Length: 251
Figure 1 (cartoon, rainbow, N blue to C red):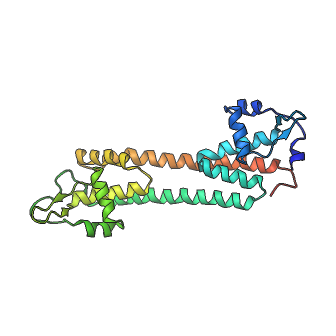
Figure 2 (spheres, rainbow, N blue to C red; figure 1 turned 30 degrees about the horizontal axis):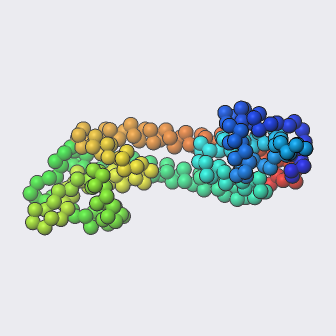
Figure 3 (spheres, rainbow, N blue to C red; figure 1 turned 120 degrees about the vertical axis):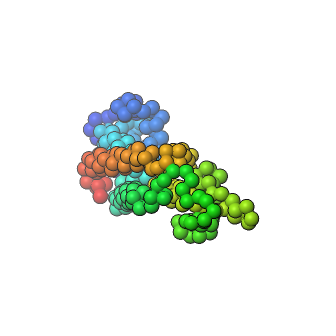
């Protein structure tokens, strides 16, 4: 395979670097990582690349936005080692993750639609001496499918603010707290960090409803769509690279 790669037009590391907005060291690093096929060498030991290397680099850079750096690296390494099936498996896993993320977004939107009028109300919902709609940390954790320690962590981050029973000291979650916990749970599943969730829930409390989440959900949906489109672009460049591979190396 190395002999075939040296045929045709020769490119210097700087040619690949400039054509893709990279440094020559980055090109050498990509070759060392297996993202590019092995380079040819001049009699003086200088690296020489070909249009095939340029296409490999374009494929890798196109794969990164949709699949991430680590997966894109593994895909290119597998292709260059002749293990195309492994590369396709990695790509399938990325698509599965994107589908899971879309389903999570739908779950968040569904959770918001399913919130009761009391949960959608502002501060003070279901608070009072009647205890209507109140629960404790254990039952709420089981309801959400998480550990009580997670609820305590969310409390420390300001996501959920239960009151304390004056007699027992137990945490008491009213309906507004349950709403906040459900939203935090769904947003965590969507990949949001605690520091991003806290301001959203604070806005929900202050605004007296869920309107502030609409922009977050719109942004989330946009990021998923961008990822899906990036995967298509990556697939096109990878297919172009596969077509350029020598017949003895192509999958």
